[in-house]
Length: 321
Ligand code: BTN
Figure 1 (spheres, rainbow, N blue to C red):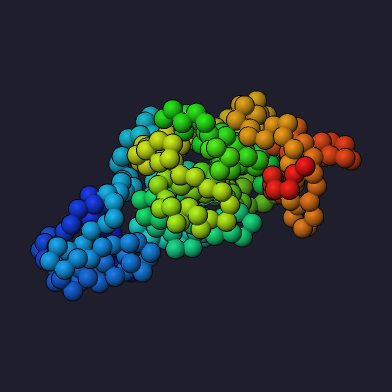
Figure 2: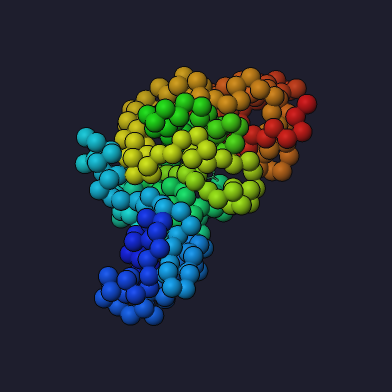
């Protein structure tokens, strides 16, 4: 990693041409050093136009993460959080899982993840300025066994934040995907630390598609959509709003569990009373009609065998009769 890569990208974020010479003068380094910084950005998958006589340019202007702007957007609850903005990291979840001494409510957001993780062993595709990727460490007095329903609560916080920006069409797919027009806008990956009896900690990772190039959206292994197709929102304002709602929702969850948020979750539920196929972790699948979620966040599905409860698995609409 060259330490100049992200400072150079901050300058290029305006989407205009900047000559190698001007950049070299600005950072008081040689043009070769600027070239190395640009090379490293390209190795991270960041597209940079390089035109002889004009210099370097990003395809589009981008809005980068800015710690102060996020803190301002959180508002009064900003003091709750320890916020770090990283330029480049393998995965914000992995980073927090490895940092056993991180303080409660540490949030790590990254410009670039080189090995972003999705649920069920998938990778999470993101791009500089085109995706919002962050993880939040939340410590609980209770044990990991009592955290069932946590991931559904996080979904509620995301929907509330989107509604703050008048994005009212977002819905939830159990356990916690955020959908718009039936396509995936955001995903949540929760990893737990600690004992079953307690205390415990959750690393809550969130990835939101902000403005992904068409080819990247199409390369994702399921129908996906980005926020820009619905509304352009400043990612710092969005992250601030999400953290504010996370603080409320997670405090509520600590006191009352998921049950206090269940009615709200059901209002956002994309598949209520819809026929679905449940893909189970053992490779089998079951067809049925979704009948809401229980007080602990377990999915209820009316099947040929009666009302069944699912704590794991994935909802699919493929091949549903
Ligand atoms: C899913 O598969 O739906 C979950 C996606 C979670 C992606 C986010 S991006 C920030 C955090 N760091 C990771 O490596 N994954 C999560």
